[in-house]
Image (tube, rainbow, N blue to C red):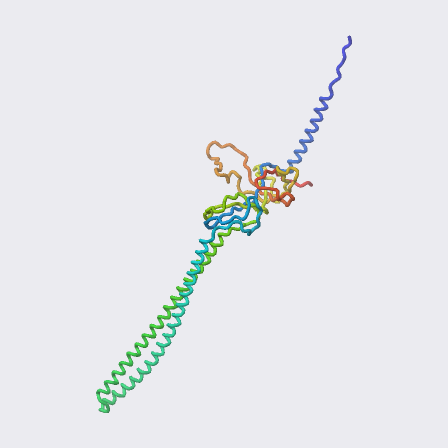
Length: 347
């Protein structure tokens, strides 16, 4: 009986050969790719989120937006009850009017004292003339009484008139000096009144500013979110009311390993793939690098001097700017992305 020889099975070597060729091609392709690219999927979309806080306390009077609504910069979003601040403004304005009236009174007093000083100066001139006349009469009577041309009584009257004129002249001088000092005093009072006017004006400006804070406007254009106020709620100064995601500030924070940073620099082109939109490719560019690793900014940064050191590759946040795209309005901060940085241009 003849034995049938089995033909060698060539399928397995062929399959193994194909696998080796495919694996080689894949390996070469991966090597060529990673020799020119640095990738990471530890990345997400970020944006500037502006927290809106109230600068004054009060009850919420009205809310003029809805959650997740788009608003424009300067748009009125919330109004607080203004009555308390309106009254404070009226009080400040009343105090300002009183201070202004005090300034007018002080100015009137200055005008009066200047007029009194002018009158006192005229009295000094008149008293000086009378004194000169009295001194001349006294000198004549002093000569005449010696030869008996006038009586002793007439001489004594001339003496009395001279002394009276001298006293009147001194009194007129004292009044003039007092009037001059009064002018300086009233000018000082006017300066104090002007200071009071300035202070009252500052109080009015502050009251107006406080009143303006009861109208809360959007600081930037974007989507309103995280609203935590209701009509009638009492809010305190500094309390966060809601947040606005700036719609013109989207960027990507990619956390690259520290061993990858040697091939990265600002201005390099970046391919971006958003997990939510896998069929859409976005372009970006490296903008800057964080000054420290992400661990250093954590709540409890690691300390390697504790005696149980285990080396862990650290990651450094890299900011990537996104080039405008048709799906920009669909991107949201926090979305996961994968980025690939082109480190070497093709020759």
